[in-house]
Length: 146
Image 1 (cartoon, rainbow, N blue to C red):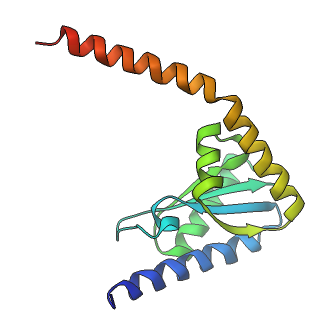
Image 2 (tube, rainbow, N blue to C red; image 1 turned 90 degrees about the vertical axis):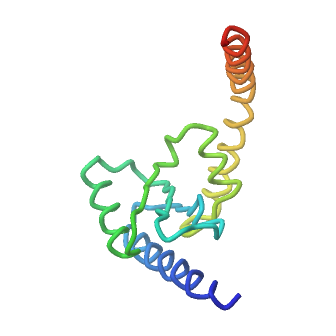
């Protein structure tokens, strides 16, 4: 059990460093850590997944600079996701299982998360249709394979 403490400490320090960088960015409204690091299941090679909601969407160069700064602060690779434009399934996964790293406006967070939930529910039918189609294709492939 004692061997878990260094990993936990490294994770906490990395997320604190990321939070410090994000606090310095006035255009970041919300930020979530998600994926293996947020769940406490990371390995030494795991990246840190960070989803961000900006006040105004940054350009690609600014986003690259932010990702580079986050990686330097965390001492590991960071995958940065623009949560406002993420697919409904990914956005829902972030909100449902992620860890809130930064919130500048609680009212906006609540509205944003409600919007994510609504888009996720609205797209449920399409996911079911897609899943049924893929299952049908897999069954057809199995039936024709030797």
